[in-house]
Length: 387
Image (cartoon, rainbow, N blue to C red; front, side, top):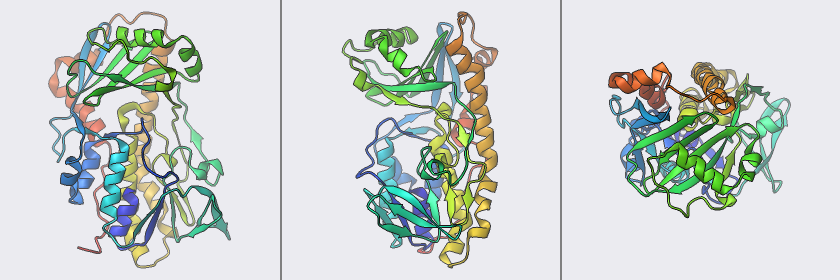
């Protein structure tokens, strides 16, 4: 949607294809980071975005060895919005759609599931929908996530990096005022994260890879007790989390395409690099990809030039931050999450780095900056044909 907005803003005729009739999907990436809000600010639309209902997170706390440790602070970032905006992804998509619709070249087609990629003389010429109709294009951008059709049909190969865990998502009603914090709890064999969503907690239980059925089979009482033990100082209503239908499984993947493009085709976001949910950075990296793609391609597309020779520049620009973030996620998965989920020895003391972050507030700005702003932030440089 962001790529479509930026290309239409540059005077390019663009059509976004969405397979569903609306954007209402729960437990998607709902964290809009400062790096993304910088982009909205550069486009002059941050104010209207922040007028939409959202919750703000500027601190992070982690419970280890029986107590909570303050580990992150975004409040001192020198940016237009020094916090994470928690907004349902469907609201964010609605917002971007409304902004993009102001440009005459933008079109959004709902209930348009892509069935196949059209290949002619070795070049991608567009897409074929499930109803058999075709959408021809000079450039097809695959922004359809980790289950992208370009992966399923092996149009572009995938390099798997691995992930030792999956996640069970669920909602928990709030009794007390949790504050504007992201909370986590790490104990031997158990990891739980709570995201403050104003009137409820969005909860994530991190479980060993492929063990969802076994965890659920233990029963909802066991699951509720796990959460209560993870956060002993918090209250949860007795009627919370009573049915398996409340649980939503995320099969975690960490991978990337060695090559993001071929003639007539470019993959961005999770289609190009599936991210772990660690740090909630996936949606924000995807936005950065979209900005980089528009910076490289919008002007030549608007002029009707051949863009095949320059498609690689998008990957050239975005590969370094992708590799660094994935390396950090992989290290955390293997050294922390894998060790905790598979460990048997009780965790008696928090690691030194957590104790230092908790003791010295200035140090908390480092993880805050890495999560909030990321690596190699993009700036909108694509033209505005309607300025």
